[in-house]
Length: 220
Image (cartoon, rainbow, N blue to C red; front, side, top):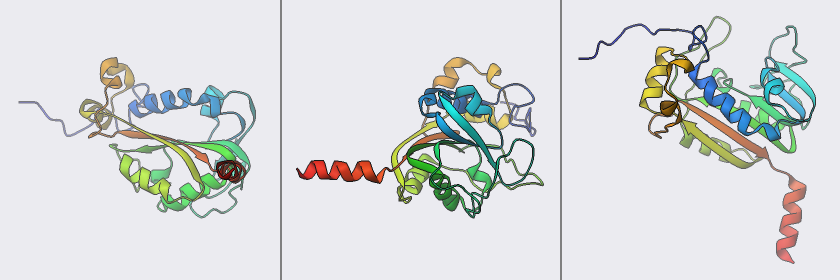
């Protein structure tokens, strides 16, 4: 009989052991979408991913609810307070939405920051440890079906691509706090939709001008 442990090997998602498993999928997702990380880019907390994966970037702004070095916009995604409107070509929003209680408003406000045709690159936890701290909470876990329905309720949401990653082995390893170097590559590559560990979403903001022209062309 397997010896089940009461304690994980890491309570820091594996950061103290190497690259966390969810970050492997996040960075793979951003690499696959680096062609849209261009122009005027917005990121949360720091410009780590914009600098790693950006192409033809004109500028990067850092959004956070608190003021600290590097932050260029102090704003609240949940309330919309001081959130820019229609300014960015790309918004990189990784592993943030689950710590915001009113996540639907947060997603609407995230879409608001984009120019028409701009792209939101956003990730959500499925199976995961809790990340609650004294500074912020941890409210939600998501399924691919829930995200599909949620984005369908956002008027500005256009083209949408949701990809869920995970399997029972990955779920176990991530909950235990294992790092990527401890996981066989074959296991990282295998996907079982019943074990959604993390979701990656690329969504384009509707462009009313392009849609209106397309409608006119259809009528001709």
